[in-house]
Image (spheres, each protein chain N blue to C red):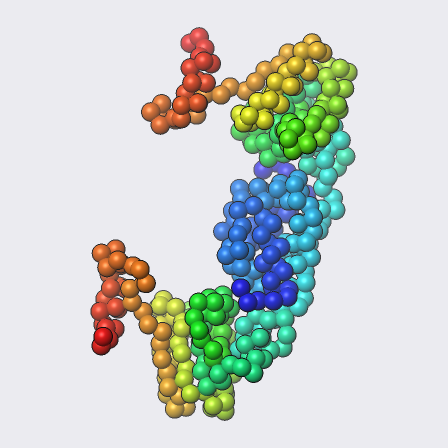
Length: 198
Length: 198
């Protein structure tokens, strides 16, 4: 790349976006500067506004513009259900696809002692306080099925047990519409172990 | 999507980037706000700076921060060669991959009367003045091989002929390393018609 100055800096800055490498960043830069300057201005302003306004919900740690997110602030949701997820994207995915009407708690990460991420970084002290005080009847664990996600789930279920709160884990098995023949072994083995009366 | 306000606006604004749909835009937004706020700030600022500083080179219409781009301003380049391309990205591609040491002229488009893009929108009046005055000995046509690109090339070669300037077109044929068996028919036919002594 032989461009210098502001163009090179914009190409470099666009590479912070997930999935954007040097070629895509260059294509985006030239597209914005050549064909869509209005949109580039709007994007710059939207980034500035979002950084200024958006923070974490004081209660559930998802991203929000207010001190409480729309879920925590809504009077219509069932406060006895609390679903634990790793990131705000999963809050959106669950709200969009399921009929879940309880509250969420976002870890913004997962337990990973090697990376220096312990219970406090995930806000688990806040969560424990809530399990103690807040009338939560069921803790739904929706962390991912990675090693760290599973470890986090075990840690949380121990914590819930200490406070006498029932813990459930979302089901893992064959994806809907998936064919047994093509499903990976770990999933198939989980699906077998988790079989239910029919 | 149930997000509102600044988050939704950022998701919407990111969709101006080429190749970014609603899902990718949401992923980018959450990534930036959750994990990479510094980079988001840098991106906002880089966009602002680039919009403020970057314009078209007065002589060749490529993107630059100065009144003349680095190619036009460089005393070391051969001013008797002028290569016509459709966009600044192609200037970069040619500079990177070839040993070309002449100047460029960027159309920022191609002749397309149906879309209201005529000679003036492409700066062809400026180009004609240059062919008349500037001692250009060879005009190298590197427009794309689309219908409009070819039409533009023909228009330019007519113009060059009026001013007694030699016109060449970059070669079209089998891509380097390509296998005849898998090359499309139009390319193969062009390659046959364009065969040379060996």
